[in-house]
Every structure is written in C-alpha cells, then in structure tokens.
Image (cartoon, rainbow, N blue to C red; front, side, top):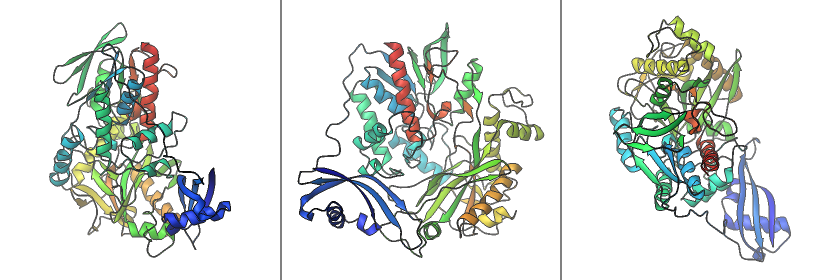
Length: 535
C-alpha cells in the first residue's frame, strides 16, 4: 500500500530518516515496522512563526510493500539515422541544450554551434577574470557551454508552468546527475560546483545519439534567400546548410542583435531591469528570517524576496544567492557587470541579491538624449524607434561603472546606508567579490532615477526586514544582465520569425524566458515546432 501524507515537522525531524518514519507511522496509524520507505514529493520552509521554524512535507509512504525507485524508467534518447534532418542551434545554454535533446527524441539531428568553450576550458578563463580582471569576450560567465547558468548557480525555480513540462526539465537534470532534492524542494537549486558535470553529461548524450556540439563557432552571418536562411556562417569561415535555425544566444550576445538589425531582420527594444548587487553577512539574513541568533545545522541559509513600488517604478530583488558569491559577469573589456551564484551547499558566509529597477523605453531614451549621447552605429541622436536603445542604455551604465571602479574588474561599491544617504564610504567591509572593490560615489555610477529609486527601495525593505538596512551590507554596481534589452519577434503559433520562415528565436536572448527552467522549456517547445514544420 502507498499513502500520500502531509506533514509539518521540525527541521531536525525532517533531517532524520528514522524519526520521520516514526512520525509517518503515527500519522497513518500503523506500526513503525510497516513503513518500508518513503519519497519526499514536496518540501518547503515555513518561518512565519517567531517561536518555531517548520518544514512542510508531502510524503509518499510505502506501507507493507518494498519502496519503488522514484522513476521506473529513464527518458530514452535514440540513435539518429544517417539521413535525419538537421537543425542548426545557435548557443549551448539551457535553451539550446534542451532543444537539442528534444530534437533527438523527435528524430532530428541537432548541430549546436557555441561561440564559447567547453566547461572545462572555460574554467581557466573564469579564473583569469577573477584573479587578473582580464575579460575574454568569447569565454566568460555568460558565454560558453551551458550558458550563463552553468557558472551562475543553477537556480531551477520558475513560475512559467504554462510554457511546458517543468517536471520533464527537472527529471532530465536529475537523470544527468543532479541531486534528488531538486525534484521536491520549493526552490530547487543545483550549485555552480555541480552544474558543469551535468552539462557535460548532456552534451555527451547529444553526441552519443548522433548530434553535434561544436565549440568556438561564433555566428557572424546568414545567407538569406526568398525569406529563408539557406546558410549559417561562423567566424572561422565554416558554412552550415540550414533547413531550420533555432537562435538561443542568451541575453548578452549584443553582436547578434546588431547583426540582425544590419540584415534588416526585425527586432524590438524590450524593457528590462538594472541596478546593483547587495551583499549582507549571511548571519544577518538568517537572524531576520528565522528569528534566531544562530541558524541551526538543519536549516538552509535563509533567502528573501522583496518588491516595492517607488513613484510608480518597480524595484525588486533578483537572483538571490544565500551562502553565495558575487561574480564578475562582463563580456567585454571596459565594462563592469556583476552577478551572483552559490555552491550546492550554500556555505559561504555572505548572502547576495540583485536589487534592480524597471527600465522603460521612454525614461531610458530621455536619459540618453539629455546626456547628448550618439548611437554607436548611426552617429545620430537616440529615438524611441531605435530597437537597440535599451541595449545602449545598458552598455552606458556598465561602461560608467568601469570608469568609476578601480581598474580592470575592480567594481565601484558603497556601504548600504552610505549608498542611501549619498555618501562615499570611507572604507568597505570584507566581501565575496574576488577582483576587488573600490569605494565610489554611486550617484555618479548610476543614472539618477535608478539611484534614487534604489535608495527609497532599500529604506522600504529595511522596514519590512528589521536589520536589513545596515552599513554592514555592501552595494556593488552594476547588476545589468537581468534579461535581454531586445526582443526578437516570433509568430505565436509557429514560433517562426515573421520575416524569416525558418528562423526560430528562442530563450532569454530572444526575450521569451527568464531563467534556466523557462529557457529550457522554451527550447523544448521550439524543437517540437521545428519538427512539425520539417516533417
């Protein structure tokens, strides 16, 4: 017999299998010896009570029968026939990799072209970036095997449950090596230390089935005839005959947006969010969220999610990393971009989060015009019809952060209260950002409306979380790659570009996803659309 049971237990009870079996037996009125095993189906933390933190569990108990494995069968990937139709996939991030896996299941041969390096080679470039501040434009935290998610934590939480099968995405991650916990935790997370092995296993499966994953293959041009892409051309001169092309280049491939614009392929400016990373000692966040002086060993490092309206402009936390590290995420020299990640144990002494402001077309355009700036390509004033306007705004802020930093990837920073009271910090606390920090006048780094909105937002968050508003926290600029500032339009039914029939814009870079899981689901969905069209 199998029974589905809802439990509310203490953290130490949830962490002890024998204790949990005793609780299960009591809950269903059975002898303890009759419980042969269990699967946790859902798990979440409830820290609303000031007296006790609880763990909510949904458990499948096996009573007087042997427990089954969580999945009886693996998801199978066939070996492709020699004459399988080919799909060109640009980008080996989550959208591209999961599209490739779906293509194999549908009998299509994926040819994945990735501008960056494989995960192992990529590590050396990240080490150089962290230690020496040297940016490789083709191999960094954004570009390379697995995309931005590989070395940016592996958070698998999404609200996009209408876009596809979240269960299939999580099951595939588990099948390729992720911990079982991702299948039931409320906010599943893999960890930057474990993701590279999982991504490598996915690539090996693609190749084993007959697909290809080619590195250092940067898209630089298309041959378009009669409204279709006939050839895809890479920087090394290789030309790939193209029946269908899935474009999954991620939110930072600015050269792709420029290429599309130069080729006369329709793109649109898309609102995004921009701001800073804020970092607290993890002990402060634990104390606020768990109402305790010291977090116990059975509780995970505490996280938070904050949102506020300031003068009709949204300010909110983004990509919160408990027990995490702030990382340099620039993709070109002369810019400062920061992001955050956590290892699987989330055991670093700091908690960081993006804290960002909504950026709309009109406000960004007005700002650039007032600055008297010119469009990089056209040498003319910006206007609201420029599809690259928000990209140039993003670029301006990143370049300004570099100017106000301490050289190379040393980022401008301020203590939190100093940031909100227009002071340049006289000194900075220890922080996780390895290239180093430089105390700066943050009002000179960020556009005025961004800086002021963040100031009011932080003060409001300090009222919601007592102890959050403190000079023991540090603010680092700039968190600017929250999503793509450009959208590549596509038909709502066929998912093809309205001008180019066999071009399928996909994932974060095209403006249709916001994270690993939603990008992966978008890749699967477009692979199905391509299969329908080719067959």
